[in-house]
Length: 209
Image 1: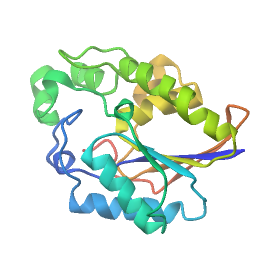
Image 2: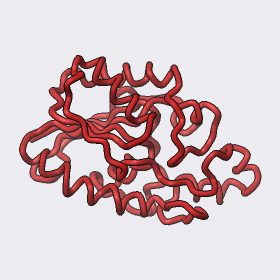
Image 3: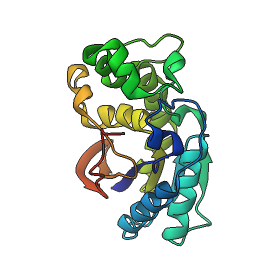
Image 4: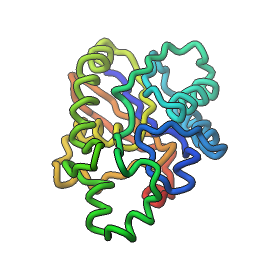
């Protein structure tokens, strides 16, 4: 049995402004470092053997802050683009709430939380799933099966895609899943299956930024 720890990056400068970020690469906000520290405090009881993160400043900075907090600056780390946030295409850089006013609640929520809703020049959540899950199965799951405890620091939609897979969430139910910045999901994995789940460092503002 092994632990799989998922952490969404701390709040970024663009998150604070309500901007769709996707593959854009803003810095972590000051509050984001505090969220990362809080996440680290919540996982001090788990001996992490290896960490994975995306090639974005906000996820890398969050992981580095967690490593400092848990006293593991030496932690082996893999940075891979396949763990990136969803590519928001033409919506990237636009204010979410202005888009909501312009296109209406239904279209806004379809773009924001839908499973297979295309964005011009961007990705669907299904597209994200189709790059994140094979990466998990090929690279991370074998390590979990060896008994290694793995930490993944990524973005909201890359983690939503992975949680969909882990918890076998139906396509029409995934829109209900929201992971707040700095939140921590801790799974125990045995024989390729989830045997226990905890949510730590809950963010009360999730869904509002």
